[in-house]
Amino acid sequence: MLKRCGLALIGIALPCLALAGAQIYEPLAAKVRADLQASIADRPAPRHAFTDSGSAVDWLAEMSQRLETRIPNFQSRVEFLRTVHFEAVRAGLDPQLVLAVIQIESNFRKYAVSGSGARGYMQVMPFWVGLVGRQGDNLFSLRNNLRYGCVILKYYIDREKGDLFRALGRYNGSLGKPEYANLVIGAWRSVWRYAGGLASSPASPGAPPAG
Image (cartoon, rainbow, N blue to C red; front, side):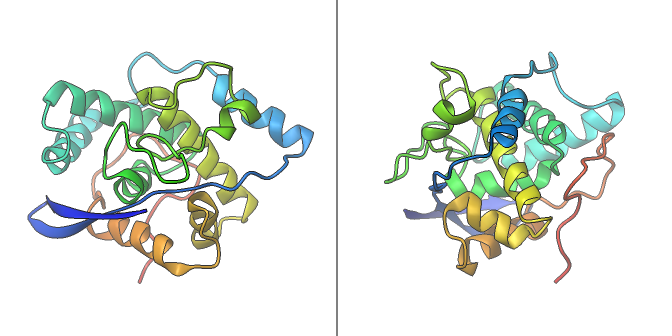
């Protein structure tokens, strides 16, 4: 499902592409399933993953400005960004990559539903709840959606041994087709690139590929 709308961020007018995902169900090895279950179930920190308050203020202020047109309410926007940062760093991902995925998957629509049933900001397929989650997990919940989405994306990156293009294709259910990965990486480079320090060091990947 491809939707287009206007988006202006950091002074650049961009077409807003929401290319909803449809992760494909595949049986998981017992250990992989157990590891993913543990990742989903682990309790979050109370606020965010920053270790330095100055870096937290700088990142939140800049990202909040870029996101204002999509999430107008300030408190909602800051809660969203704190959760993105925490769940991304927790999973070993760059928060800007996660923001790029959300832009392309749902255009920051909390209650987005794709034609295949993928839900929420990161367009998580409901089968993941039964596969690695807990009965009753609500994929429209901010924290649940971002936790599932980040854990799933990191799983695909690890599975593809760091090949981000293939991992993004798996995440979107479009493996072998370049459009989705190119859109995400393009948004990562041009819209969400951040020059400041994150006060945390995600394991992988940490910066947009050059190009």
